[in-house]
Amino acid sequence: NFCNRILNFFVLLDDKWEALAETIETGKLPSDLQISNEIRHELDSKLKPNLNRAQELRRVGVDHAAALQNGTSDKESSNPKPSLARRIWPTLHTILSSETGTFQIYGEKLRQQYIGQDITIYSPLYAATEGLIGVNPDIRGKTFVLHPQAMFYEFYPIDKTKDDDI
Figure 1 (cartoon, rainbow, N blue to C red):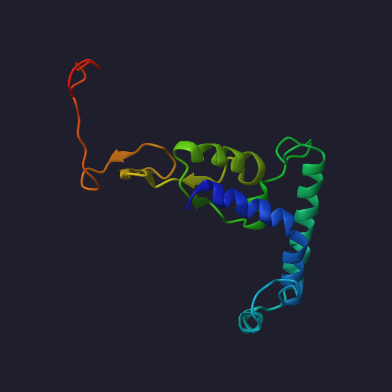
Figure 2: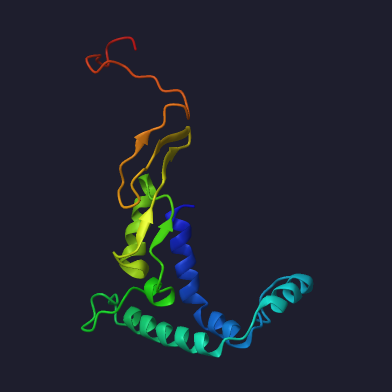
C-alpha cells in the first residue's frame, strides 16, 4: 500500500470519528451507510457493542479535535500526548507502506499529524512503473538492495558522455 492511502484513512477517520464511536457503542452500522441489506445484516451480526471502547475513542477524538482547532499537533501542545495512532492502538509499532519517491511527502504528513516519530513506516520495496528496483532489509531504515532478478538492468560506464553513442 502507499502512504497516501494510509493518510487518506486517517483523514477519513477524522471525518467519521463520531460515526465510528457510535458503531462501536451500539454494535450496529450507521443507517446512512450505503451498502446492501445483505452485507449490512452480515456485518451487523458480527459486531458486538463495546461502550467502554466507544467512550475511550470519544475522549481521544475530543483531544485530537481540540489540537487541530488550535492549529497545533498533540506533540506541540503544552502537555504533549502520544500520537493519535498510538492512543487508538497502543501496541501499534509498524505501518507497512511504500514511502519512496513522491510518496515520501505523505509519510512526513502522517508523522506530523497522526503517527508521530515512534511508529515506524516500513517501506519494504522500491518500485517504479517499470518494475521492482530494490528491497529494503532494514525495518527502521530506507536502504534498498538492488534486486537483480526482478527486471533487466543495463549499466553504462561512468566515463561515457552525452555525446557518445550509448
